[in-house]
Every structure is written in structure tokens, then in C-alpha cells.
Amino acid sequence: MKVDLHVHSSYSDGSETAETVMKLAKERGVTQISFVDHDTVKGLSEVLKLGEKYGVEVIAGIEISAYDFKRDRKVHVLGYNYHPDAVHIQTICEELLKRRQAHSLWQIEQIKATGYELDLSAIAETARPSETIYKQHIMHHLIDSDYTSPAYKQLYKSLFKGDGVASGDVVYIDAVDAVKAIVADGGIAVLAHPGQLNSYDLIPELVPYGLGGIERNHPDHTTEDHQKVEALAQQFGLFMTGGTDFHGTYGANIELGEITSPSNLLKVIKSWCK
Image 1 (spheres, rainbow, N blue to C red):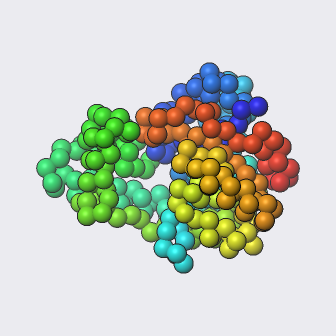
Image 2 (image 1 turned 180 degrees about the vertical axis):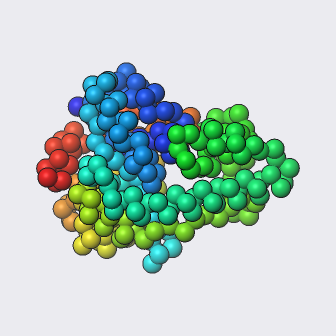
């Protein structure tokens, strides 16, 4: 088994269509996959059909953008194997997507005011089938260099970070509410890449609300992170997950399926969500 439970497509901020990603998964020998596009389940029906077409088992997934207001930091919460209608998840994510779109439109105007030429309709076309524009889509129209190149990183930082003209972020939902929504829809809530966002301290506070797992295997995680996740998983009886956080050319230079989840996780998730 080769299980990649952290994959993004053009339904959010990935550069590749769901079908292109699924083809790559088949070529790379991935046997189970989860598309965890940010704050949307819009692509689930297509992904399920593609899974049947290419013989790759699909686990319903999402990555919800949340916040730890106590510690003033971002938190990402993964949701797996939720009910297809995902009523609670869609309810909390609908407002998030509206905020993100409004913020992206503001960012475009700020960048244009500095002298860059940006065509909103062209950016929106790049973002499809997502109905939401992400920073990656804006950058696509500003620079031809790869995401991992020094030129890309420098421009991104100058525009979107610190004192950049398009810096700032949307108001996210509370991480507790993200966990509760996933659980209410019959899914398993997993804290995403705690090493990347330094969200370890939040784990004991999310467990009472139904947190079921922690992402162990991630491109940004070190050996120390692995050890921390393992200790916390054992302490609180949580599952461990993992994946590539694949974004195509909009993300780190990593092959689909290069980082995988524990081999027995699929059975664990299905058992947990019965």
C-alpha cells in the first residue's frame, strides 16, 4: 500500500487538475489518496469518479484553515472520510471562502497600484475550477519562475509578507469549530503539520472536541517533529497520518506519493468513522 493523504488540486491552490493528479498517482503507484483542498469539498464527486477510473481508492478529505486565538497563530485541520453531504463542514467553510476571495481581490488592487499589470479575468480563469483566487494564482501572473526559485520567493515575500503591499490575512475560524464540524459530519479530524505551524500546544485542547489524529509525515517535519507527534499520539490515543502536501508547481519540489501515511491507516480511518 502507498497512501498519500495530503494532496491539493486546482479546486483550491494546486496547479494541476484533479485528473492530472490522479494520473500521477496511478503512475507513482499510489493506492489510496485524499484530496484535501483548502476549505472546499467541491471536487469530491469528480475525485470519486476519477478514483474508479484509475483504480485508486479515494478517501474524502479537506484541509480547513483555522486559528488558535489563544496563542495567536494559524492552525490547519484535516478532515477525512466525512459524509458526502458535509453539511457542517460546508457551512463553516462558506464564509471562509468569501473572506478569502474578498481579500484576494483587495491584494490584486494593492499590487496593481504599485505598477504591476494584472488582469483580474485572467487570474480568475487560472483559478478555475476553484471559484476562489489564492495568492498562488496571483503569483502565476506576476512571475514565470518556479515556486522554489529564489526569484519567486523574494517577490512573494516582498508583496505578501511583513510590510508588503498585499500582506495580511483573512479572519479564520476557531480550530475547535473546525474539529467539531468534521466530527459532526462523521469524519475524523487530524491536526495538520503541527511542526510547520508550531501547533503542538493546541493538541490537548482539541482532543475533548473529537480530534482523532495528528499528521506525522510531512515535507516540513523533522526527525524531532516525528518524535513529538509519536509521543503525543501515544499520550492521547490519536492516529498518525501523512502525505506530500502536493501542490504541483505551486508548491515544494516533491513527487506525489514520495511521503506516505502509515500503511495501516486506511483501515483505521474506516473503522473510526463507522
